[in-house]
Amino acid sequence: MRHLLTLEHLDRATITRLLDRAERFRNEGAPRDLLAGRTVLTLFFEHSTRTRTSFVLAAKRLGADNVNFDLSHSSTSKGESLLDTLHTLEAMHLDALVVRHNENGMPQYLADHANTGVAIVNAGDGTHAHPTQGLLDALTIRQRRPDFGNLRVTICGDIRHSRVARSDAQALHALGARDIRLCAPRAMLPDALDDFPGCTASEDFDAAIENADVVVMLRIQKERMADAQLPDASDYHARYGLDARRLALAAEDCQVLHPGPINRGVEIAPEVADGPQSRILDQVANGVAVRMAVLAELLTTPA
Ligand code: NCD
Image (cartoon, rainbow, N blue to C red; front, side, top):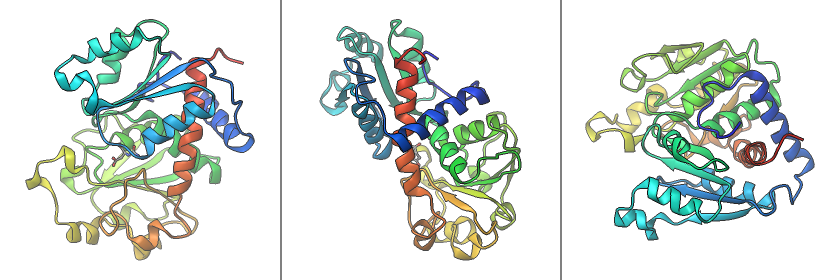
């Protein structure tokens, strides 16, 4: 693996290897010097709390030098092209570039133009992919439910604009999940299910959550919508919010995931977000471990 751009073509064995490594890092700690002398640069053109911080921590915990590229003070704000920025940074000898961008395909574009020896890691591009989120969600689910063969997963929210939904579906499908139910109001469903292997789509949340072993809730991606498309928050909550009544329709031990940031009282009620079935903070902890595993995979030769 040279870059991590999407989970689309990753097979079960590769995903399992990454998750196993992340699990080992979580349970046994990681070799502090594994990436000593390597440089990991984080370049985020969109806001982020969890993803950016966890990449920074992941790099540091493996002993890499980390540089957080401050876009607001960089020459990109003076009109420098992204390729010129890439080549400038490469001249400083970086090993990995972790990039988040609002345009679909931008990490792929950088990978196509990067010098050999620089690994590009997609930390979320537009509505296209968020591979490390897909991996960390799969790891979180696997910790409680190792067998994906008869797993029932409901993903509810703004699927249309969600790179998380795409990467989750691809990871879960590759690991054997065959009952993945996408649920959203029509305007937030994708036009086609080509990016969503093994998924079905519906608009009825009560039906879609029935007997689910996992429910992944998603935020409405306001930044990718015109104001006129935005639903009223309380109407939305009534039809698509996850509260205790709805969660009772799912399997008894149903795990509740959300990639964050959560909008309390919109897609998820506080009683569920903070309740005993919530795995939201486990996802955050797993996020650091998964990003360590990804950096280790890309920047070291196989052990
Ligand atoms: C997600 C993202 O940025 O795609 N958040 C994250 O990475 N934890 C989802 C979102 O912004 O709603």
